[in-house]
Image 1: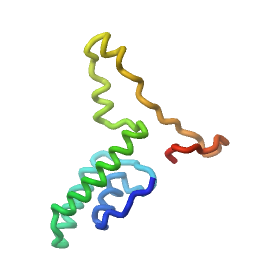
Image 2: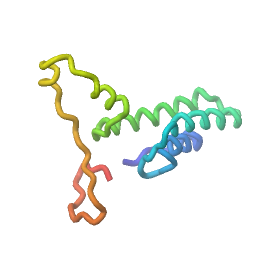
Image 3: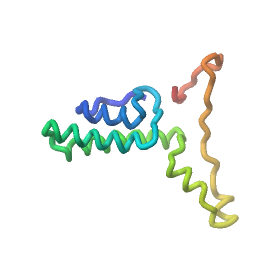
Length: 119
């Protein structure tokens, strides 16, 4: 999936930092998103940019990333914590659909990529 340029290099830097410094695959470390947001704020203030506009662009980028992750079924820490809570009873367990699972293929796999695959 290609994202459109947000118009601010500081926004793009913050997204890359929040993903653990990777531009292709996210490998966030502990508190990498928090550090990225703080750095984004400090950079924008140091450059004299209106921070509300910068924060709006950043929030838009993060929200689109969250929607895409939910669409492909990538688990989030909040979803994992919610799943760990005890269910309301047998009715809740029966109505709960199993979450979609991501499949990791080895680089040497001969299985071809299909339409809709996240590479």
